[in-house]
Image (tube, rainbow, N blue to C red; front, top):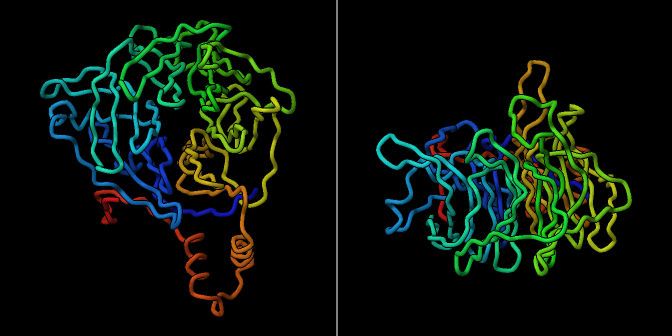
Length: 391
């Protein structure tokens, strides 16, 4: 395992992109940081994992959905949504400001569907018991269902943290509130959820002592470092109590699944004023944590990075660091690749780059690979004269 590629100077995504892997491409939903307009449609970028090149997708809307989808309600802020992949479609559930009449807005909770084959947005009609209006929840796919847990409920004032579980059958588009058994995780937000077999694993996140969300009082935050999973067959919560070296409790981290392990990277703990760039993994089979020391140039400390898996590699981008001396947060504009099985060719290219070795006598295809691993990958947008393609 090694951090093999570190590409700097890409354009910043705004503010915390959500991404899914389908085939050899990573679809990223969120705005470019320098083109910020909450009432614009969400931007869809695609990262080619072979070339590490970003492209902006020119999407469409279905004819029968043109009246339902307004530019301002194709998701205003990407940090408040969740995105999951099912087949050739990406499903996004969120609460967002929607335009109902001219210059009139209301809070909408909707399912948005993006078809990567037709490049069309749609808003499927759903039935059943929908989740409350909330944000900063988690979601994952188990078989043909999307499961949603936690989040901050915004239907009432003051806003409260949730511990509810809902599922959406993506074949029938029917919501269901799950009356779970066992002891659930405490109400929380800014946590992660991943699926493993028939289980939804939950780690991290925050709540407050009185379960009321206060955006401006960081001292009230309560963090959790326990691992829970929901057995979706018996609909029962299980507390794992793992052995080993636990990661420090955190929020706004990233998590992914690889070979029966849940990996977590980054995040922050405002109680200890800590931003993380550590890497831990939790064994689903052995029920233990371990801290990993990885070779290579790893990412700097950040919260809300985006991590996507394709084959034996993790593609990490986005996120925000702590305040610098000028009280300005640094927004990440780099791409990192964590390779679980780097080839000899990859290791040799890393050696060439690290020692600035002469490349003039190398084969042309090797030189191209070196450029891919080292050249900046600017993220295109409508106003920066970069290419806009249909993939």
